[in-house]
Length: 327
Image (tube, rainbow, N blue to C red):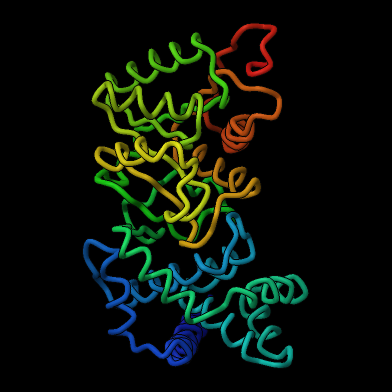
């Protein structure tokens, strides 16, 4: 992009951002004040405002929303959100056409996305999300930070906009992590294999990533913790909807020495679609994925598929040949 055109886009973006904050009844200092509880430190104001916008985006998006990522990649999280706000306020199509042209996006596809986001675009919900995350003790990461999991880049347009963290661990745990997933109905053999694998990974100073579910997931988290290791549970809903409820004590233990992670705002309950999309994060954040017993309909198969699609190593441990949970 020519230098003069780039500066013009930056200036236009700042104007749109000012309009957005006005719409939200916020000043930049107030926006940073809302953001501060979610960050260990606040640096450059422009970056902080982009991170503020990323948290707002989490209230609008379903996981893997490629249109949002296209807008953000073409501009920034703050500029893209301001552009969407202008489109929602505009009763005509002019703002949509302008935003589509500026970001080199098909206007029809953008219009469909705008209508999808319009249903959730609420100043009240944005504020509630900030307040709920702060009350829960969550932190946040965006892709302009060094701690952002490098593996997410392999997801391309399905890369998350923001990652929320809950617990005493740091995001650096992803750098040497392996995903261990499998059936919710785990056999004694599968449980033993999970324990052996996780103890070996801990001895190699690797973190274990899984999905916090019953069966192999829970066995992987618990075996890692019992071996003195660090584990990461990737959630399929907001932190106010930790699932399954029966694993509350396990989630509390993970928070002590590891991390609970989610790309979703508070208020988002787990669903089949969100579980499947969550699996792409498990696969991308980890250096490899191991499946220990899985049925034909197991969600861990989607994790393995995501891992294979982005070039990660995939391992599988077969169970008994006649058992449905290891088909």
